[in-house]
Length: 278
Image 1 (tube, rainbow, N blue to C red):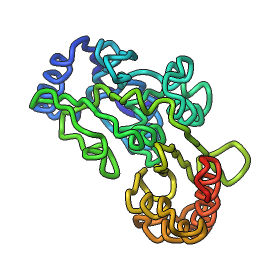
Image 2: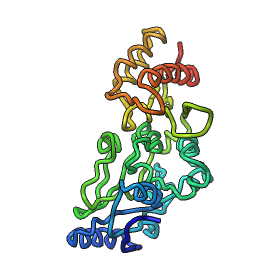
Image 3: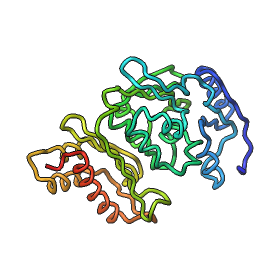
Image 4: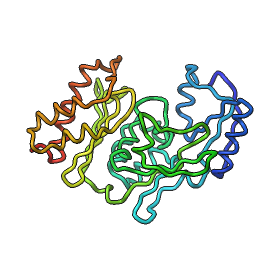
């Protein structure tokens, strides 16, 4: 049970959801968009989230789609991770999503909920960063579409009252060779230490990371170092590690030094697994 009461709304149209938010915000209800609600329940119980009005997006048609449109695969933001796993249209996303939380939770966690979460892992954004996906966002200023690498800076840069509707990915990326690895401190339980997602397009290796810093990221400088074929692999990995953003997490899951040790080995695994270790 949550330690506060709230009003519940379930709009069926995008403009209805936007108008609801604006109205409730003017009434200082601290409205919150949800699609799965798992984070509200988790954080609300420990007083890290609060709202007097919940706007549930699950019945909005545009947020539920999963289809090919021309040369793009489109995912709606309210699709559950389980649904994404079952259809397996984007294998790298399937593999990454399949290791978020546990099986029961993945039936409730949604794609948009994970990408826009307060918790810093947000692993499902990694494949979309790697394949230069487009995101569709709606708010009081209307609909806008933008490259995810332009609008995701440590987190999805949403203005007050905006929410994620869809993500579109060029089909040519879907069958690219890929690797997705999650490392935990102990066995296969608990929070991840580091998650790495990578794919290879032509001779280019792309890498995105979660759990190393207090935000997921893809670094072009890191990739440039890994793809410098004139250097031996050891030098490429050393140069890549020198390009990491700051800070490196240092918490109960692992020290910053241990995380860097794990990452070094993961980068070797990525290069060897993608046939880029020469």
